[in-house]
Image (cartoon, rainbow, N blue to C red; front, side):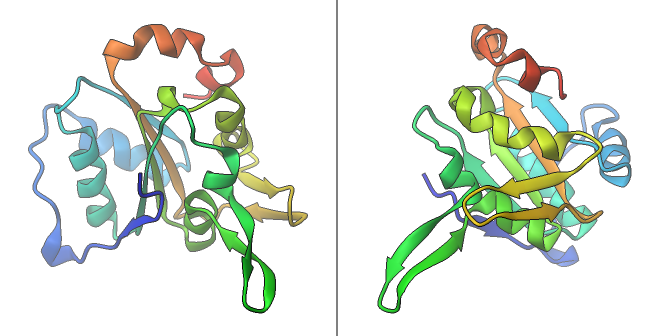
Length: 170
């Protein structure tokens, strides 16, 4: 898994995507109103391509995280690392997306652990903040930041297993 997958497309490089309905305007409406988005669709239907297309269309950097059962909150938010000069803080992809006003896309979010997804809660309501407990910092998401999650309907039973406090935010 590469949790450091950051893409910034130019307007000349917009990934091709063929709309199936009004999803382009719905996504743009959510982005304009600082709302998170949940995308549901079967494997291979173009969920990731759609998010890439929209990030390029909106001119926003995109951080993509492939969720899995071992994904930790620290992998999303950040952690202290040891280097030549001692320990230092290293932002995770979610924190970098908030700092940069980027789009953070959590692919197959239902595969992530419940204790990991709770870090998303304050970003998905009207507070739009990311408390970083390990540093004592609280980041306020700028208007360009957007949280997008996706899941495969084949994992519907896992979605039901998602914490109700997480599920109701989309």
